Image: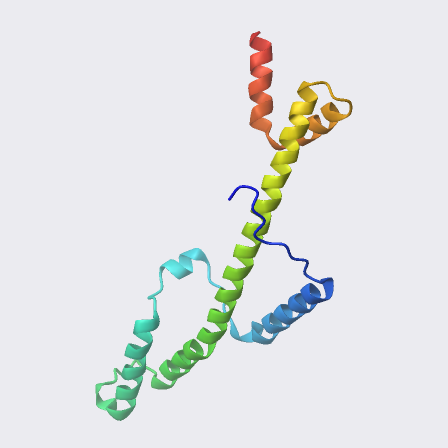
Length: 161
């Protein structure tokens, strides 16, 4: 990618704040209806993907039209409620996944460009410090803290010499 600037945006503060407010409002609206799981909880559950939704829907239909095959322990009304939650929340999840993906990509691209430019500045300051250019050493020593391994390697080589 080099020095190619692929993104150059300024997001107005009011747009960011409105976005945060809307997302928080959506979270508050759904809070009484969502359920958090631990990783262990998730691991132990049967998973229902897109293909399984139609299977579950067919089972619901058959359990209503042919109740003689419904096990005594099975609550058809609860099956219907659970399926309705899946079908109602899936479009919201897809929107959130798209937003998350777009946010992640934008942050990654902007972060990459910022980091590459910062490294270019750092390397220029590093070279200037080696050449004893005034003010460069203090800036370099401050910025060098980002690379602690480099500091350890340098300290080891200096003590060995």
